[in-house]
Length: 566
Figure 1: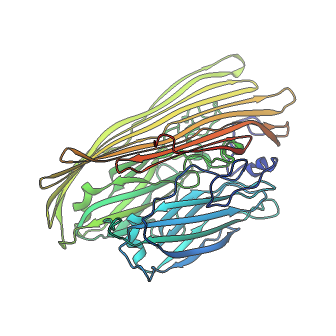
Figure 2: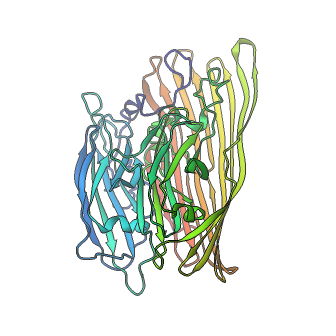
Figure 3: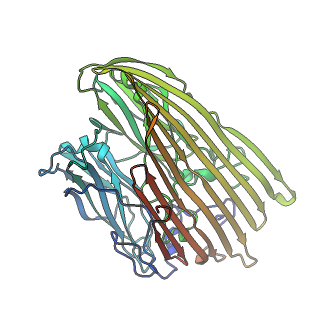
């Protein structure tokens, strides 16, 4: 959508009049956050599954209850470990239930931390003038169990502008469930230390440009055997729709922001490349066209999934007793990203000091290619494509001498990215089609004596965005949008060559809508809205979950369970 001067295309975001867009429709009654989706409802609904629980009775720690978010002040709370089940735990689950009152309001970023460690990251739905949606989120925090063994201060950060214009108030209730182990559900081995980046109040750090870094210096234990980094990198402002951004040299003529359509999170240790975290193209509920996301939001929109980087080859280096700096930045950051991460350390309890060496590191820096094939015609029309690609492979290897012998870890990874933008800009017509894909193939080999464990993980983030903006003779504007957004991953574990576990997860959301505006760029309605979501998970131990949702005219029209599980 172009701005009032027609100088560049705008996408609805937290900086635009998004809330007024939703205020023009009539909403039905919603379901409660924890109930099944209701046919005919316009309440926020996702096909995402609940976290599987053990059969034991959980101890529950309330973080906050019906807390109001009506300003930009961080809300604090105190976490106290559950007295009746001190751990270890078979499962630890964060549970959040939220709602926003009817009125005019933007989508908001939601962060919750315990001891400055992020335990929840997501965004919020937008209300209408007559309806306030509710929603339910969960996150498996079992790997973070060490964090919850002592009292910690907590922060809930959902900055929200409330005044005479923007009236929607967000309310939230959050708790953590601790499930004791039993014979059928023993406690797994979890990280011994859980450390935040940044180790400070305020939540995610602002990365304003490609040279900005989130960095944290640590003096770590001397007996680290394994290390991982969980990473969130959320694009905002001119990088909210980074996958539609254009290279700097053609950004103005294409009416886009700069930096190209390629973003990637770079991980470093002591200033040297150590790993890569691809950026998932999350789309918020005010994004592009807010009607696209009612009642089904985009993939992970309400509940981001962190990307885990394996830093185990650096275990010996991190254990040498010297201070080390772990940092991350976002390649091509145009303005801006929010970033937060968590360092997970697994220790060798049989020794006070491990030795070893980083033997291989070919991570390096990305070197994306840009191909511009644009034609400018008479009258200033522009047609053609802009393609950005990044393809690289690297290997990181190291070993630690532990109390149970030498353990050698090799991480081999390929990261392939492609972004193809097709333009047709001609007078009253602006067409942009984006086809993007990120594929990550990772193989981790761990040799512990005669035991060889091979873990392969494949990630795929396909995204297709088609936008057609057409001005009518009376100055009105229609914006037709279709989107296909996916998150796919599979995982296998082999022990000495024998397959011992596999899993597969797929999450896809596909909305379509045409947004209507008058000559004053006031939103008058929408037409042809439809959307769907299909979530599937299965593994080799017999777990299978499948749910499909459909919607039309911004109400839920169908729920199907179990497809592909029988």
